[in-house]
Amino acid sequence: MRQTLVAGNWKMNGSKDSITALLDGIEQGLDAVNSNTEVAVCAPAIYLPLVAEQMNGTIVKWGGQTLSKEASGAFTGEIAASMLLDFGCEYAIVGHSERRSLYGETDQDVADKYAAARAAGLKPILCVGELLEERESGDTENVVARQLDAIIDQEGVEALADGVIAYEPVWAIGTGKTASPEQAQEVHAFIRGRVAEKNADVAEKVQILYGGSMNAGNAADLIGQTDIDGGLIGGASLKPEDFLTICKA
Ligand code: PGA
Image 1 (cartoon, rainbow, N blue to C red):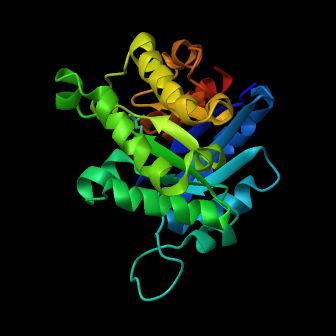
Image 2 (cartoon, helix red, strand yellow; image 1 turned 180 degrees about the vertical axis):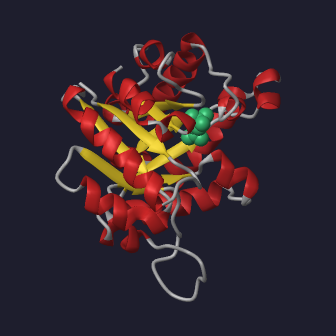
């Protein structure tokens, strides 16, 4: 059986004080989280040492929000997979729609970052998802397939077993508009089916998270769907009570 994973994506939010308080709040509620649920937070890189210090010894894992496709060298401002590992990261988000739309990351960049994370022993959380226009024009499956195939073509389908997939419809991110459980399940089943065409074992194993305005009120219905194995949570991951409610869903 696949484990449930609830991962917070803090994006560019927080301060030393607010992050300390957030982690304190999360830590206090962890006892009530089911042992089949993995919990992770993806923090702004500069706060990773703080997260590592505070979460060490708890069930909470942590990760970066992006990484360089390069291993080291003259790449000003970038952070390498080995640096994330140096601070105990288990995960790195790759291909978040904000990276794709605001920083011009292409499918090829995302595949290279996936490869860099995987080669270093990090678990990439690969984000895929369609824009509103793409959904309205009936292109959701084509877009998601293209984003997925970028990894499969470069790394082989087995590479997906070393990571996590997050389906995040772009129109639902930070908008308060969540995909309905049925809409999300439909795309999750499509993703798993596409992986299964290449390798049924990998399809059965890979965790597929939903992301996009998941909150304390809708998490249980979403995570209750057959092919939804957890959530990638933005806004609601900044509030300990809401994040914990999702972890318990
Ligand atoms: P949201 O963000 O929960 O605030 O919609 C999700 C994400 O961007 O990963």
